[in-house]
Image 1 (cartoon, rainbow, N blue to C red):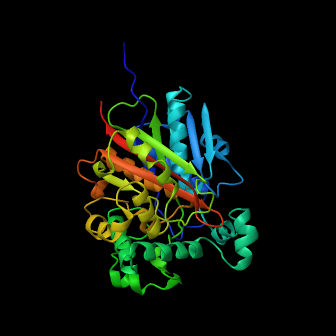
Image 2: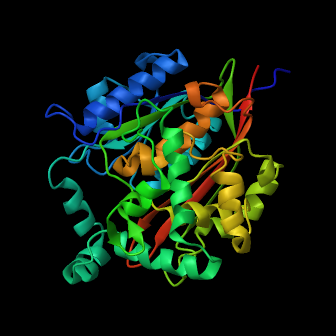
Length: 382
């Protein structure tokens, strides 16, 4: 009896992340470019694709099916997701089930956005009805004020100072130097970090994720050959605190124990970590929830494990240095863990990386992220 292989991720593709793209730039064009790059990485062609998943805020008025038509794709599986930083892992979880069920053979997942002019301001002003009806009229535009308060709370609870958060930003900027697609690659010192203008105390400019235009894609196959990345475990939580929590814990805390049991490994065994990083405080919140550090020892963990490079995390620079491509931010985090496990991360490759964890976090209402998810991934070879 022939034993069937589990599905696998076989390729990644990412455009340059641009602060000031040219006038010809479009969301559809960026998504198409990322798909082309991912298929080339996997050694496949558009004709091989029979499944497509898309996450984007600015593809409108088009949808995933419109993008498929523009690319000339005839599909057996199609999905769209708009849960912000949780979209990438949402798409991955559903695509994996589709491949296991025989609903498709080759699926491309792509996420990204192009923001022109006042696009981003319009997005955050009417992000949802809570923002539109309650926060925006008060002048509370976007998430910065909310996460400034969360950061104050984390500083008080965990004994952290601004230079501790600066150490995270510096580490990610160091990683971005090895990523030719990152929007910000120049060296960053602690003094640079501390001298940056305050946006919403204690958040300075370098604590707030920079918005860019770009896109990222993954290719999955039902029966991969050669090297692939396998989904060992997955978990998700939505509105678990009913927006009544203090924000210092994410939905990951509710499923982390089951995640590691399903993966049959421990947090300490991870060779590479990717966590959604719209603000430094959220890097730490997810690290704690995943079991990588106890909350009471965060200061030591930051400097001994993260700033030192002992634990490779957000190895392409994360969003704080590479940039946030709208709904594509989570896909950037996920794709970099996949690249590391495939052994295709270029100058930033972590030697011998075989196990990794990636998390997603997103959708801010009146308070903090309503969606959180995570996957444990492993390198597999035939």
